[in-house]
Amino acid sequence: MYENGDTRHQHHTQADYFEGAQVEENEGGEESGGGEEGEEEGEYDEEDDLHGDDEDHESVVSAYSEDQSDSEEDVDGVVREEMDSFCRHFKGIDRRFRLISKIGEGTFSSVYKAEDLLYDRYENDWDLDASDDGRDRSPPPSKRRKFTETQRRRPKYVAIKKIYVTSSPQRIMNELELLHELRGCRDVVPLITAFRHLDQVVAILPYFKHVDFRTYFRALSFDDMRLYFKSLFNALSHVHRCKIIHRDIKPTNFLYDYARRRGVLVDFGLAEREGTDWSHCPCQLSGLSKSHNSLMQATTLSTGYIKNDNRPSRRANRAGTRGFRAPEVLFKCTSQTTKIDIWSAGVVLLTMLSKRFPFFNSADDVDATIEIATIFGKARMRSCALLHGAVFETNIPTIGEKGFTLEKIIMWATNRIAGGGGKEREKDELREANMSATEKVACEFLARCLELDPAKRIDADEAMEHEFLRGL
Image (cartoon, rainbow, N blue to C red; front, side):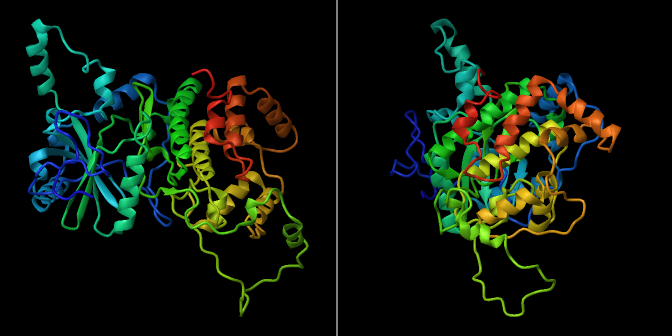
């Protein structure tokens, strides 16, 4: 990692971060910034469910416009003091960037919106907005001077991700390496550069205009949902082809520009390469083996705890955000794959279709497992647990053996069926059968994403060819 210098080439191309490009001299290292940091088990973004009428397109655009304001008057005193302290302790940062506001905070980092004061000194191949609005085209000679002056007056924004000193050096290096490797996809945030000053490390990432998920998810049409997930799965396809697991797919880590219908996947703080710390898990076998089935023949369970439990302990990566973690993560699978990201994306789709956010809101792993069992039923959860060498049992009377279809869950959530018995049940089944064709396609796609068995779950490339996303 370069200390006290910008790894970008002046007037040429962005320097290769890990291959010893020439470093510009600087008295103080600069920070790099990015999307909101992910959370590990035990931490959760408290994002309350919204109640009320769906917002129309105009209200969403209004929220979008308000979100883009960089007025320093909107920054409260505490945040302003925090940014001033940051500039004082990270020598030289204020000569390169003008901090505007704080746009995110997580377990391992804080993220600030800032103006890149030295933007014109570098050839910024990461700036997709420049290509989108035509600023990369040369103006006619007669207008070149006026064009250049106008372009220079227009501020260029970046996101500065200040990584906390409590993060391990290995964790920081891992995130920067993965971001560097994933450059080249429009739907994945690129790493511009990174700096270190003493024990502080920052990453500089593009600032991406976006709207708070809670302001628009209820108003999305099916076509809007398809465009959203086309962009998300395009990002996942790129990430997964590199054999990288993001581990923290959720709305706050997919910054979506509602006006341009484009999103960017951010925050690779929990990401890892597939196969890291793998050990044998029964789910690697095809189907349930006889040894797994033998567990089903276990004697009647007794209450209480085993006094001397000689079973070996199981250690598995459980990082992620509660409510979005796949069943195999909850069952401590030791051979987790990129399919855990697909499950998380499915939860986002379930949130949109049900118009409830967050959909799952568990306090711990046990509650999270019960929430999933409420939908899929005890029988399927038992089979899922056996795939990973675990046992699932519950005596909660409201959890049935068979569970419910996702279509029924969505119609319940949107108050289109009552959920009663007798004649009410017959009416519910009739309404469920009369779902629109588009909604049925969305539900079928959702079922492929929320498949309990990761081996049968759809992958990102297959998702791009599914009817729900095909043709966009």
